[in-house]
Image (cartoon, rainbow, N blue to C red; front, side, top):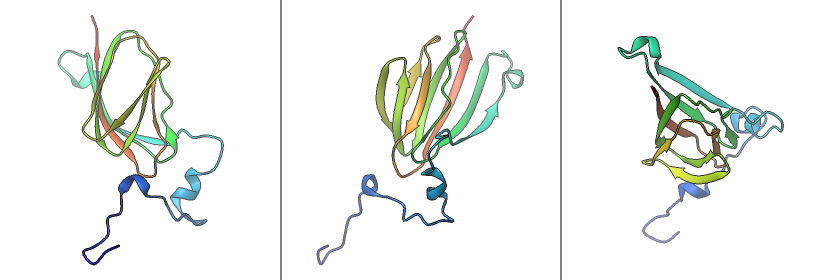
Length: 128
């Protein structure tokens, strides 16, 4: 720190933890699939019946189940945080402001190895 102030880089943050902390729960070994999915639009809510969208939050140190869909393409828009988008055998670092497109077919998952939540909007469209 100098006389003007101090910068705390968000990439360097870590939780203090403690037995009653959410961070402590997330550090438990075993099931690292800890995320919340908020459904915004289901296919039956759209005129075409082909759209589905939602918002997902992946908690620090956790990941999504991962999935594949041969009949849908998907777009992710990252709203907060940073993480890793895995498609097939490849991985990409993603962060707030990034957009990622997944073609129909490959298995894909999102991981958050960092200390702040990763939040993204997603939309799938059924391919005819």
